[in-house]
Each structure stands twice: as C-alpha cells, then as structure tokens.
Image 1 (cartoon, one colour):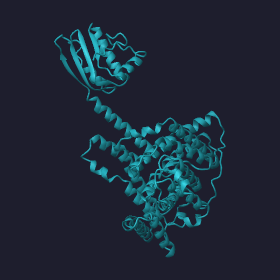
Image 2: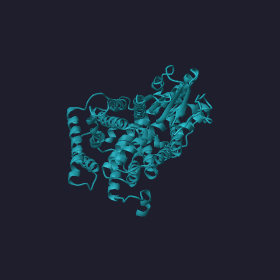
Image 3: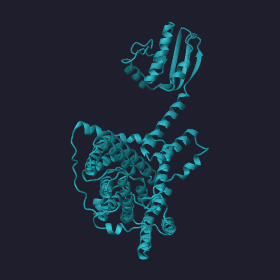
Image 4: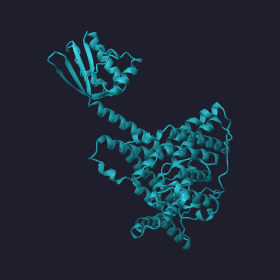
Length: 524
C-alpha cells in the first residue's frame, strides 16, 4: 500500500498520519463552501458536493501541485449565473433540469480548453504575474474569505442580525475555535489544530445541547447533503451551432478563471512549501477533472485557496491528503450526512477566519512608502477589484496589464543617444536602451536630420530593436535621411535584430543603406 501511495509523491517521504488528519479537516471545511457556491448559481447542494469530490480527487492524483485542494468555487458559480440569464432569455420556457444539462456541457467544454492550455504549455505564462499583483490577489482573497462568513451572523433569509443570546453564543464558539487553532500548535503539532477545534466545539454543542446554527440550518427547506455516488449524466442538449455559440463564451471564461485561480494558488503554495509545482500538468489535471465533473453531475470548479491553505498549514505536503479529503467527502455524502448536518457553523466560521488571517500578506503593508508608487497602486487596485467584484481573474488581468504598461513606460524613458562627430566628419548616434513601441517617439526625436552631415552612423551596441514599431521607426529615420541625400549606416545590430529586419522586409520597406544583403552595416 505504501509503495502504491509513494507513486504519487516518490520524491518526498509521506507522513501518513498528518496527511490523513489534514484530509479529514479539509473534507469538513469543503462541505459548507461547496453547498454555498452551488446555491449561488441556484443549484442543489449535491451539484456542488459532487463537483468538490470529483475535482478534488482527480487533481490530487494527477495535478501539478501535491497538497493543493480543488473543488466547487464561487468564481465559477458566478459565471453560471450569467449563463442561466442567457439561457432564460434564449429559451423562456426552459426548466431547471434542462439548465443543468447546459451547465454540464459548459463544464465539459471548459475542461477541454484547459487541457489544450496544458498541452500547449500555456501554464508558464503565470510567471508574468508580478509580486504586487500577487499581493493584491492574496489580500483581496483573504478579505473575501473573511467577509463571506458574515451571513452566518444574520438570521436566515433576512438582513437582521442574530438575536442577542444567539449572537453571543455564535461569537463565543467562533472565538473558542480560533483560540484552539492558535494555541494548540504551541503545545503539540501532532494533530491538525483546525480538526481539533471543529471536534471540540462540535462535542460541546452536542453534549450541552447549545442552541446555535448548524450546517442543516443553512440548507433550504427540503434540501439535504445526503446522496449516493455521483450519477453519470451525459448532457442531453441539442448539438447545433446555436447552442455551441451560446455556451462557448462561458466555457472560455470558466476555463480562464479556473486556470488563473489554480495557477496563482499553485504559486502561493510553492512559496509556502519551498517546492515547485508543474503549471502545465495542473492545467491538464484541472481540465480532466472538469470534464469528468460534467459527466458526473458536478458544476465544475478549480483550486480552492482557503482549503489549500488549511491543508498545508496542517502539515500536509503530499497527494494523499487531497485524496483522503475527496474520499471522506463522498463518505459524508453517502453515509454521514445526518451527523455532518449537525456540525455547528461557528466551528467552520472560526476555521475560515483563521485561514483569512493566515492568507493576508501582512508584510505587504510595510511596502507603503518604501516601494515604487506604481507597485503600491497595482497592489491596492487588485485588492479592491477582487473584493468589490469578487472576480479574481479580472483583478489579476487588470493588475498585469497595468504593471506591463508601467514597465513599458519606464523603459521607454530610458532610450537615449550619445552624439559626436569623428575626425572624418561622420556623425555618430550611440543608442542606449531598448527600442520598442513605447520608445519610438523619443528615439526619432534624438536625430537632427537637417543639421547632420552627409554620412551618419547609428550604433546599436547598447540597444536592441525589439518589435515592428521599432523597425518602422528605423525605417522612418532612414527615409528622412534619404530624402536629404544622406547615407545611414546601422552598426552593431545583434543577430536577432537582423533576423527581425530580414523578416519585416517582406512586410514593410526597411530603408537601410549600404549593406549588400539586407542593407545593414554590421561593422565590428
């Protein structure tokens, strides 16, 4: 058995007790999250629970990051809200059962997109996410995890806070849970403190019959988490162009959101565990899990940062913890629903509060006044977008775009030219800094075409022609000199620059003089 489990993580010694106990803790924490996210989209609790089981199991076995937990997530659930609106507009008489068929088809298509992303090795592009964006993403997510627990302090279905006694009991149990999670590791780390906290608080509530909100109280009337093995469900939608065009945009969004959240979570766990995951492998695993989820009555999902942090903070580092969490979740669904529904929400709220506190990058607060203002702006903006819109993917994309624009602007300002005329009367322009789309205007402004002598040398020893805009800028300069009957030599062009000019010569007129091949003087 140990040899079989070792296949999943052959390079690391597995602490089986820690992995099993961590997996059990995660399984308990998955239940309210999966139920809540299913309800966001108007699905039954089992749709979210089945997704959590399938996503967690497949990605734990085949994913690129041991210890990372996947399941039904809020970001994916929100996308389905938009899909349902479109379906009701297109088919006014559509039933809830028919909507689910479209949902399953969308999840399957999203999985295919994710597999293609892994096959074409697009996972590496997550490296383009700068640190300020990561800080903003993590901080925003911590705030979301924290604030998402607030509905538990309100009377169900209303905007009224719990009555005084109920509120005091709820707060007391939450504080007790958090105290155990904080204090137990100072005494012993042999058992995950989160699991101990849940068990202790649950025993107190059940033993003394303390009146407080339980998981059963969060379900709608007539709903339960009890079910069987996920039933096979081949989507029964009409395969035509209209339906494809209807679901493909949402499938693309789900695939993108899922991969961004999963790969960012993977990077975060890499930093925490000081190990390295495989982004492309994770893309394929996420896609495979979503496809299987769609065929097994699940709503799909992606990596869950909260549950992943619970897992790693409990000491889990191998694939076994995720497998245990998924299997135990199915066991709860099939055989333990009656007991699980009696668990107090206060215990789970306390766990999530501690997760949010541990997730927040408190060190990022020290960067104010010490780091560049642009980085601070990006970090704060990503945090705000994440919190306000609850759209992690959009927040990250905006942060990356702004960071890229700031980077381009800063590099554009670095283009400069050292000018001098040699004893032969030839004017030299020694260019410093990258020549690309943002720096072309400043580059062109460096030249004094009318005042320059009959022969000019532009030296690129300390520069580089980077893109088509740069080629066009060089072409415009040579044209201006040619119109004045003056010669231009380009000097010290790198091999990649010459290749770029060679390829561009078929598209635009690269007016470079003197060289017999591509009119490039490459004097040493």
